Every structure is written in structure tokens, then in C-alpha cells.
Length: 243
Image (cartoon, rainbow, N blue to C red; front, side, top):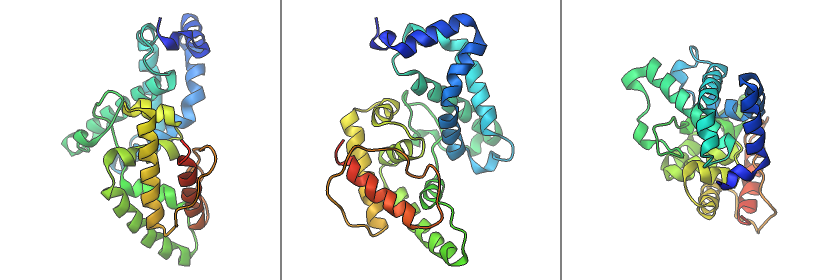
């Protein structure tokens, strides 16, 4: 028996699969907001007027229902990680359908199966980091900071950038991040800290002592000034040192 088969989640999914698709969808809906964040951030701007995140998730749900017995027979990863992978696959297919040869080069994307899945752009990540600034003076500051952040993100190792994205915008735990990328938890933690340290330098924050356990809310709710991403980076970098 696989370790995950002994979990309460596996038992619940197994029982729900016997009750039909509607019950299974109820379980998947627990992860809908996390999946929506992932799709929204990775959806190519050229198809945003034609493809909605809800459509991508719905197609993933249908595939999950069709393949649930396949998952239950070999639950190599937690259910959410598997469902996220299916959602990424659907998003990739929609990109190819609407963009054809213009779709993003698959060789640079990362997944738990090393497949061709969409990556978020540095501009999208920078926008999430900087929040929603509205005043004219802050708009100019935000534009300048955005360019600096984009350059720092572009210069990062791809996996480091992906770790940052998974931890802070998709709000995955360190364990889930490691499972998605197919690396060890310690390696995921080290890459996380390295990425945060680089961004802190861009935002002119000095390294600080160790802190408590990490949380994963950076960039999740936006803000009204540049101090929020700065404070968040400072806090998360310190906490990451404890992982």
C-alpha cells in the first residue's frame, strides 16, 4: 500500500468516487481558489479575452473525474498536487489551441512530470509583488520598481523563480513545492531563501536575523503602497531561514 493510501484524504476521495462525479467535484472545489490563482497568474495575456480561469478549471475537473481511479490506484502525490498538474495541462493545451506556434517555449517550463506547462512572466510576478498602487506619485515609483524586479526575476535561475511563484502566489507549502518540482524539501527551502534574498537586495532591504515558521501570503491580497511587498519580503526571507 502506498503511504498516501493510509491518509484520511485518500479514504475520502475513494468514498466520494463511489458516489459519483457530483460528490467528487465537491472535494475538488476545496482547491478551486488555489487553482484559480495559479491559472490567472499563468494565463497568457494574448488569450485572456478568450479564456477564463473557470473554464480551465472546469475542464480539469472533467478530466480528474475520468482519471480518478488512475490516481487512487497509485497516489504518488497528494490530491491537490495531482489536480494542479491536470489543471496546468489543460491550460497548456488551451495556450497551444489559441496561440499555436506562438505559444511559450515549453522547454523552459517546470512540472512534477517535467512536462511542457505554462510559466508566469516576470512582469506578472513583479506586478503581484508590488501590489495595486493608485496615486500618481506611487505609480511612477511602482513603474521603476517593477522594472528592477523584472530584471532580477529574469536573472534568476528558473527553478528559483518557480519556487518563489509557488510559495508566495500559489500559496503552496514547502512540501507541496518540492513535490511539484520533483526536488527535495531542503532543496526547495534553500532555493526559496536564495530567491527572497535576491529580491530583498533589489528593494534595498538589509538581511535580518532568523524568524519563526514561514507563511505563504506574500502577494496574495495586493496592497496600496510599496512598503507592503518590502515588509513581506523582509518577513518571509527571515522565516525561510528556519526551514
